[in-house]
Length: 412
Image (cartoon, rainbow, N blue to C red; front, side, top):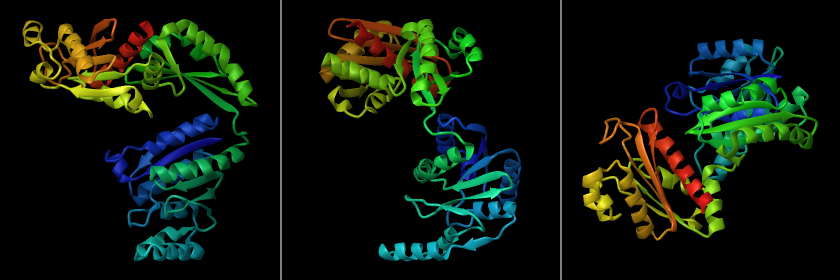
């Protein structure tokens, strides 16, 4: 089965909203072993919508459309699908009555514009929306199933998981649970170099397949196998995973949902330690990531964002003479910040960052970022030259700092 996705909304084209629905649908299709051929975005324009839908139904077995089924005038997905299908829109009297009753039960005045959500192309099958007022629908146009879902992510995901994916699996003849993926997480080698090291596995392995994904300095290697059962799929993955691990060694730090934040949290629990951070150039990015894990209050003490130079001295106790001699962007200052954070925050381990993130250079060329980690028994400091713009430099540095924390904990 070949599936396309089409997102409707001018706000997507203008960049005012990020199209998270596309990635959510793509992940579920990939995990189910269904071929996802194309993603498209079209604005709230009937002519363009009609053209996009008409083209998609000629080349796909299923088209998933998100957005444009709300109650406002610019919500035109129903009309466009009906036009391409060559059928009229019909009123679902039962659903219209349910909507009115629901509004009355809440004591709210019913806006007649909501009635638009009770219309759908003639012959379409309703897809219930348990989290919203706009039901979806599916209709077959030629040999292609057109499936329309709301653009609100929480509503779309529920309908996708509960109704759409089971339907597509049944239509494609794919038994659920026969596609299994393993995500190996690595850090310390570029995507290009990882690709070179694993190139023969990428080109030579058909089942499982090998894919790469770069994210904020980390490289993920995804192994995906299809088989009659999960056990058989995992058996196919095992030898390829072993070969990847043999080649990348300690660069692999986690599997599947073992993010660097979770790895550090578990390491701290094993040590019975706490952590704190002192951040200048990263402005709290490290603290934000460390507190993304549920239960982080057990291991995370706090963070000091000492952005201004005088705060590094006043709060963290970095000697002004040290800054005068070596500068703010120096390994000596980073180490002193980490030491100070341990004392002020009362943490067993502290990580500190200073640097020149841009856009204008500060003491050092833009991209010069320095990370220090202090534990009860040792101190580490490292200077990185990070690529890209300010946002990328800061994000990559936060990732590098977390991996230096992991390294320090492994050394204890």
